[in-house]
Image (cartoon, rainbow, N blue to C red; front, side, top):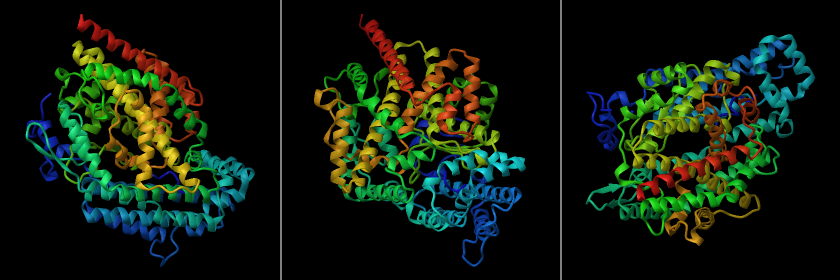
Length: 635
């Protein structure tokens, strides 16, 4: 019951707005129209209001050390009566909701411009407060374990209002062998003051202070390759430009491999600290046990992908054929498959496409999505200093989720919008259907909702577009998605597993060591030695570009979720009403059960290889269709 145990982590533009393409190149945030910027005032009206709320919260928990805080009267008293236990839980719940709201505001304000020291200080302050909060609550789990199952069951029988905490209580009892006494739990909680340092340092260095290179492209344009620009220009049609972009971007990153390596090694050592403190045999077991996921699921994914690299290599050969290149290179993986079909989409077009694709999930689902667009839940365009990538922030239980994008106007950006709305709807439905105590869904199921929406979008596009070139591009985008979400994330998962295993054996992780390890894995996955795809030398530094390595065995769940959502979406798209009900029930279930069990209720057993095998069949069907179109065009 530690309150912070689960906290880790579209036709024309509007008449008053510039075009989508122009806005994606407008790096001054103050010049982006308000309608494309999220409205953080839904959380707190001003920074000063946030500060007042933060100081009041600090006083409640006794963060200054001058007072005990509102939780301390319950210390040593939880076993006195069901009513005392309930009062403690409800107080802790209210405090955690407030903490999460404060943290969401600080982190999103900082993500708008990671260079701004004011908002960085706010994030750091919440980190310190969170550590204090955890330490103040450190007595709860040990006292529950001392009570034992029989007494807890008796309390549940006597006080019906405790029922909403039953799963949480069962989970505490399940993890008994990995929970220390009050003093040990306080030390572990206090360690969180240092635990976020590797991720925070990486984020500031890579987003705000890294000296990203500039390149001059074939049209004479010189661009600075920050993360958002790299994502855009790695996909340009001109092959020599793509090559330049990759060489410059990763070449510069590799110059700082010692720094990036030290940061990542610090992250791994942090994971090892928690592994040892919690008495686990490995870091991966420690990371997965919180959601009660067998380590075998992780290792089976890596094994299944390695055993099916032949199917992936078929895709790579097909990509080479479509691009008309004799030898596919790594820098070709993001280039357009069909020059004539490299279509741009305004943000307004993307909105319409995403909403139309969600029709199979019903009008209630779409109504909430429309609300998100209308009420500025999204921050759309890349600007100087803004955090790279995309995410959905659903931590503010009593407000609504938010989404960060870096929209560049390509189909991949439309797909990313659908993806993040999947997360957002998951959070919205969970938060509005579950009490706070069971509203936090596991990361293991988090990517099901996002990749499910991607599948709906692709299905809608394929049903409405008849042009062969565009259909080839869309099918190629689907296969690229499989590459990025299933193959690439498993590649990352294998790398992450290997670096932890090396460190656990006493081996050090320097930038050079990480370069060598990453390059070996990448060459195997992409068939470098057999000439399927040439993994160029600069790719050895790609590991330093991936922020997910600071998320504690997060990435494998992109791949497992994709296989689960693939199976679920096929049933829903086939018109199976029961499957649709089961899927929506999954989204509403939050963390009311363990993720493996929730997926079983939805009809998917992730302890078997069946979802993966279905995904491989679907991948081969897409390639069969592409080859038919190519043969028809040739003839």
